[in-house]
Length: 125
Image (cartoon, rainbow, N blue to C red; front, top):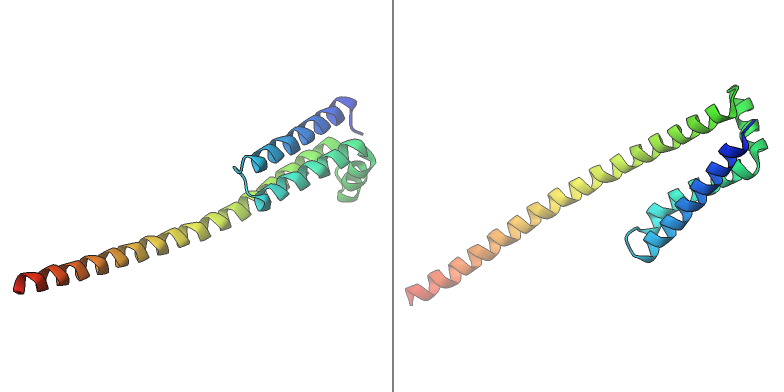
């Protein structure tokens, strides 16, 4: 069973996270796609804190004796999944940056070669 202090802390942290995310979206410092994860997570925590029976049921189904242990396990699992997807996204971005740098280098080389042809042709006349 969850204590009143834990329930209050979950509500406070969840609503604070929602407010922070909304502010970052309004300031254009966070994309909506990234913010959805945090908003959903905070709403799930609000549900767990307002209806502790849900968390008690989930911990019972999973065979976890203490609801607080379930909540910690849930948070750790969700954050590990988030880190995994962020790692995949970072890898994709690194590949895109590498490809863009290579394209820019080729374009710069081609531009320099064209300039060399123009100046070389002007000196021959």
